Length: 455
Image 1 (cartoon, rainbow, N blue to C red):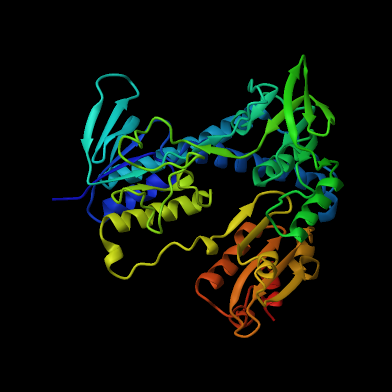
Image 2 (spheres, rainbow, N blue to C red; image 1 turned 90 degrees about the vertical axis):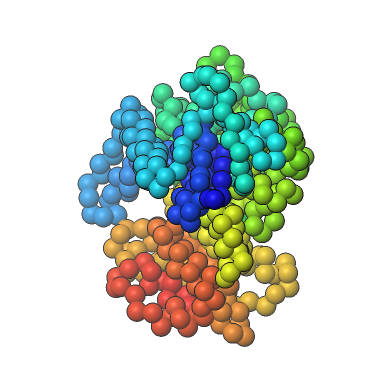
């Protein structure tokens, strides 16, 4: 008899788990109430990157003189942009459904919850009687939603979360962004490129407080060059709409006035109403489900993946978790099976210039007292960067001085999100710097800077 595998939540983790388990012979049911592909992914991540692509094109026209072109500045068509975002998300969701259904996955549109350790109740979206499904294994991958603090009253018009900004009805005259993490800085770049005046509230003394200081400095310099106002050491305690403006008050009594405010202060896991407690699944104080290396909860046949697991909140990591869960459910862990190594997951920030990193960071190594070799090469030395008219940024490579093994790297510059894959592969495969240095890259290409950093 086939393994009965029920998945609640069709985000990147759920979709990948369903596809993998079905290929391995499981009887898979996927329950999703919003969109197959994940609300956080298709209603947040993908739309923001689509807007950033448009913003990047606008920014390029503003520096077209670097490419020997007369200054031509395109103005964004928000209606067309909104339609483009919707088309991309719809196409991706349809593709996910077609793929899963072609593999025999049963997709149920509705809300799922555990009503026992081995039983899931599904309430259809269109109404009707709930359906009870018996399961040998269950994956909970319901994702997260933007965090809204008690001191902010979101109206979706002047006081917004990220999901109100794809795109907004008009470009804000003066947008105040609260939160200088990954999401916050991406929205600063996005709206500044589209023509808004932007103020960024930075609770600490640098943007991207968890990233390399040189990376933060490079991004701050670019923000300042483009007219962004940075308000550092300021922790917001209120954001109120007053007529046609918003007023943000900080702990130190500083007041900021703008036309709109965008909250980019993290997310909260979607763990309520899932019946986790009734099934005996532990949930921590923050609402996450603690998991082991197989993404198992304290109830071995009930798994959690994606944002709900409290691990790296990246769509790529969620998909990898989903694949590993499916393999574990189908018993592949009893054979050769590699655990997911979160320390080797690459990540990117889609600002301009782009930022990407993977593996061991320089500051982390020093904090651990670990000996490392650090090489840094600027894109200013790259012929391709000169040709493209954008030589901002650098490549920093971290390696073991004794063995030459690549331990990590950081890239700031054009196409960093693509280039980091080379270093990511080197870290995962335990390659040496010589392996990169001896690779013959295309000329002229930005990737040549990777070889230079490895020498």
